[in-house]
Length: 180
Image (cartoon, rainbow, N blue to C red; front, side, top):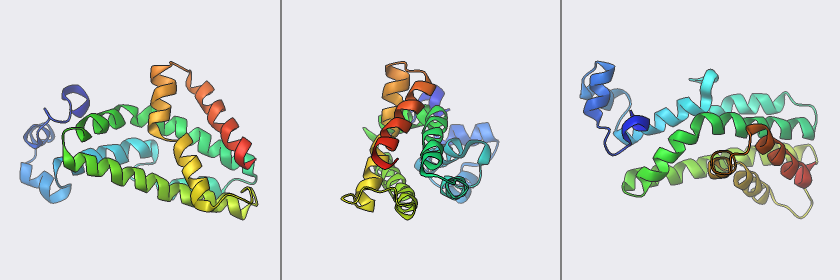
């Protein structure tokens, strides 16, 4: 409904009617409309691994790698995988954040959450001895956050019409240039 009608035009009443539940049921189980949007993003990001949180299964994927290059490949794969599934939802959030303070706050929270997750990736790189000496873990997380930002995916793949494989190769090469 958010994709078809937009965030503002979609009401909790519409969502409840479509789900064949009472509006109060949505408030009791999920929360506000912003919380529903957040949940849609979570489920979209997790994809076939849902309802497991992204952080959980990504830590497993990274732990299963043997080399820094494999780990960076996992990150590059993830940015494509997540970008393909979440780009439309990210666009809804971006548009809604311009007019809804609660969604603007959600957008900030999600950005911080991604940064905290990328701190874990930076720590894994540091443990493998892949961090440049002059780079802190926070700076490494910032670099990963910047390269993997949903807006970067949206720009290259959706606006410049790069094939996802080209975007993935670009992500991988940029990360390998820093950490490989």
